[in-house]
Image (cartoon, rainbow, N blue to C red; front, side, top):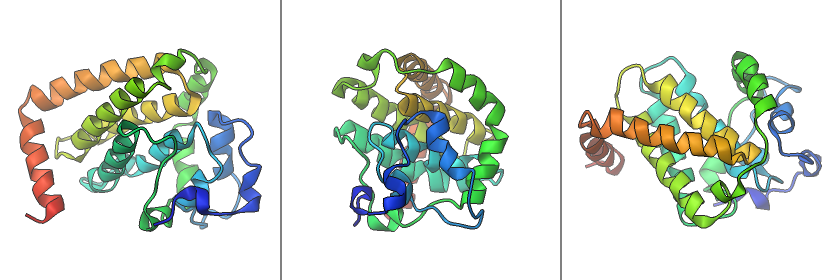
Length: 219
């Protein structure tokens, strides 16, 4: 099992002087589109924005227009991120089989092209603020719990919700990357509302969790 910090790539050591959106995502714009970027390689050298970048990459499958792909791939990764925030890890821990996998550079570039306009608008709006909603352990625990809730909802077979929950998780990722407490507060409210409306309100959350548990445990 290999945490990203153990991987040593001198070319990446100076890649993140400013961990804002444009700096972090600029690494995907140039290079061989067929090159696979392992998660361990991407997260190497990141500090405060590591969880945000991990979440950003984890949700990519939720935007693939094929039923079941988003939940099957993104769901467990989002749950892993949420659990690590809850137990208070300062940086993501990756099992080796996850650290060695990741998206191709071309896939990331296509995705960024699709969201470039809203991302540019958000980039002008987002900034580090309200650190009490980002840094303290209680805030991280609440963020982790709501990531788990949204990750479970993403994994459930609720029609036409992959993009919805994927976008919600994208906003969580941007709040973590930019350390924007105002956006994080919005995410908390939206995630709770989504959980009530799509999960508890329809009765699908409890039955869906039991189904997922049986599927993942082979029961």
